Image (cartoon, rainbow, N blue to C red; front, side, top):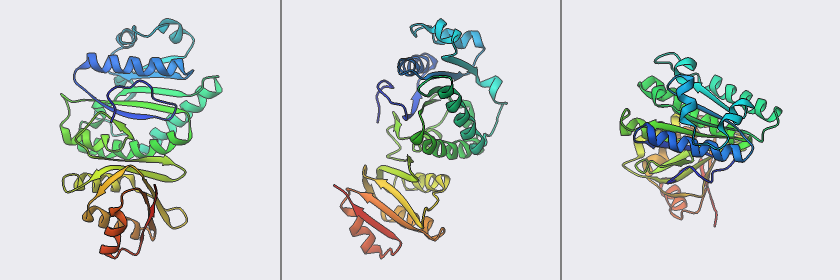
Length: 275
């Protein structure tokens, strides 16, 4: 859980639900300003024409120079995506991978993006594609100097929609989701928080969208921040691995994990107790 977007690093990925455009603009400006201070190229993506978008960032010191020298870019959502567009997750990741490489080649230390993604998750098919993308981009971020703030307007989206994308982020100001499922680098996926009866359906959806792929027959989950996992969700996780002829490796401090695996007699779930 985060209460602001300051102090985030080169690989951080935060989901921010906001109340009103003024709040979004303030948070985006502080996120991008810190990125510029870190030597990153910064990019602002939101609705509006270019003049309006530049005006949104007037609070950043040296904004005119940053724009002039290519350290700060602005992009209009309307000019970038057609109305009702369903993103291609793979293509979206590739686009940001190229943008990160271009930023580094130009002498910047990385790339930082603040984007209002509200209009990209307005319909169920958009949510499905975007949630898949959110997980894929996490794995990219873990290995490259790319950080992002994905913002969602609480007045235009219902709680369930925001929860579906928020749970795919390592950082969020959304309390209701209970857990986080996100990429952590080296083929490892991180699972944190609490998966219980109230979040089990959301977890099942998130796991299916993450579409975890085994490496050497293993699906490794860094669950050091996991505090609870109910039996139905553990069974679904085991089934996800079995469908891929894989064993789940659950690295966790939660003492209940090993007892639950033994009780359910799950041969393809191995618990690595960490302290």
